[in-house]
Image 1 (cartoon, helix red, strand yellow):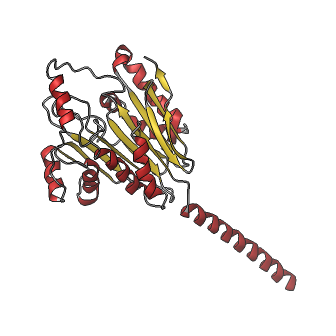
Image 2 (image 1 turned 180 degrees about the vertical axis):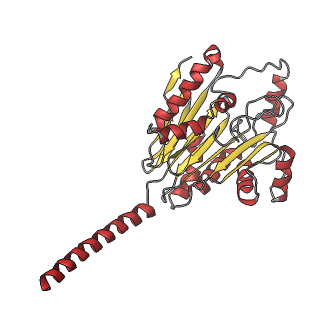
Image 3 (image 1 turned 180 degrees about the horizontal axis):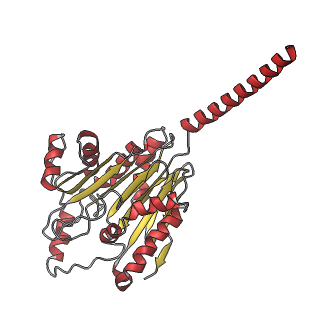
Length: 323
């Protein structure tokens, strides 16, 4: 009887120790995971700095991506996002943005005028309405009702460019110049949660009312907290055609690495648009649940920024075709 009790005691103690060990490891993993943030183009470096201020203090990925892209939205020297963005062919600065968190909450605005931070309006749509997308005058009315300030977003520099363009009114997008029109940001925080944001003033001198991929969940941005996140830049029409960022995340679900998933999405654009490749740029960045990241683009010239415990670095993306 004593031997049996001793055996039971040892067995119970062993199981208890194992349970505490698993719990401790689980708690440790839940409390801290290596954070990482990715964003598109060279201006991603300064955007990452802002996002990292939050991530490094174990803040939420959602707060980090909003803060990061807002920095670029407010900079009049960045002529393809927010304040100072190049206008459409009628001289209006129209903005698009979307945001997505780890619980698949989403918010989006499109064809929004007079508001410097469309990403924050998109977040307000997500958190304060029963809808996921507001556009045009309705988006503006909503923004004003929530205390956003109405401003003139057309800077003298952008107005000068637009008036120069009017002399010929020739619309021919230039790879890596006009197409360098979006900041997309995706992040993984120390709690292991993913979020993303995407914001743009769209193609310079576009038709009035044109909306690209940036405010469209599944095209310009997609987040699945079980798998990973992706965002896009370049010709929005081509990203929409393949539901690009949803595709990238689904490919990661099937076992591709972030880079492999981005590459496969670019290949689909390549196969369908071979007759006009010289006019198109498309790039994707992706981040999986384990903190692995990657990118791929159609044409040479796309760069993206990565900030993690190793620092903030700008990386030239691999590409499908050169010019």
